[in-house]
Image 1: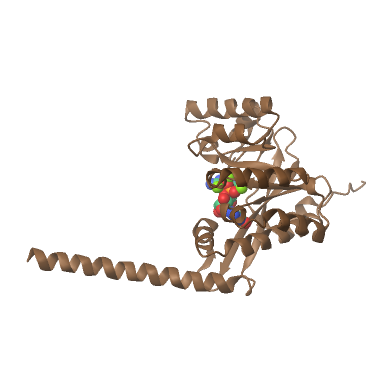
Image 2 (image 1 turned 60 degrees about the horizontal axis):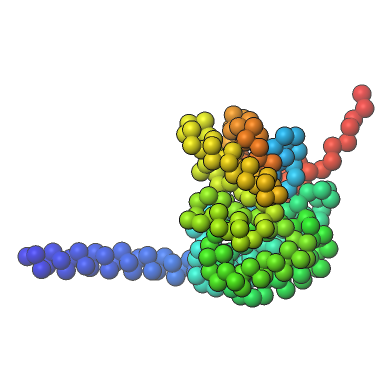
Length: 278
Ligand code: C2E
Ligand code: MG
Ligand code: MG
Ligand code: MG
């Protein structure tokens, strides 16, 4: 009896696994078609100066409108795209789209683009960035590339060389999701980032957890003494906005200011307001 139970359990898991495998196969096939089918869209989320609350940059955030599943969040499909070797063409598409879009914005507004580790491994990244800047005519100092710890974990010597190369072009480099990894501090020593983005897990608990206030304050001070700007991510309330400003963050980003939005809405937001005379 125990034996047949065991077999049933095995069969149950096998079937569940089969379903997962089929599901992933299907998503892979869908992903392969999605770029050509123009199912991807780049949304933009404003980043504001912590004091004036004026927009300083917009972060490009990829969206996938799946024909049957609707909007699939990047946390779900980006890891798959990485695994299937699709992130390089997809990442290049995001970069090109975002840089072209940014040329339509006022000159002072930067665009931030997220990069994945696989884009560094492909060894064509610096070349791609140079080509996209030339093609779109975007000034290099208006482009900021965001990387997370996972990028530096893999093959850090080669990665650092690419980062230095990109920096020499005038492109800015930001450390994303700061404080969530195991050795965030050692990465700050390894590369002179232009910006630290404080992960939203610290910002979320700013009113409640005493420790979060101290951490946000310490990172803002660290940034200031290293000559790096500090963006607080995930600012959702006026109280949080007030706190991150008070603790010395130079910029803020989050639903309090605006969620990520389609390009045409951002363009509207950035259009210089012409004073109407009474
Ligand atoms: P990230 O780069 O840290 O982006 C910030 C994420 O926080 C975005 O999620 C954004 O929508 C969300 N967010 C912004 N403000 C708030 C807030 O006030 N509250 C809350 N709860 N969330 C907020 P999203 O768009 O789902 O993207 C998730 C992650 O996927 C990004 O994290 C980034 O790591 C990755 N990603 C997005 N687009 C790309 C891309 O084009 N290439 C690569 N490699 N990764 C991307
Ligand atoms: Mg980011
Ligand atoms: Mg982040
Ligand atoms: Mg993130």
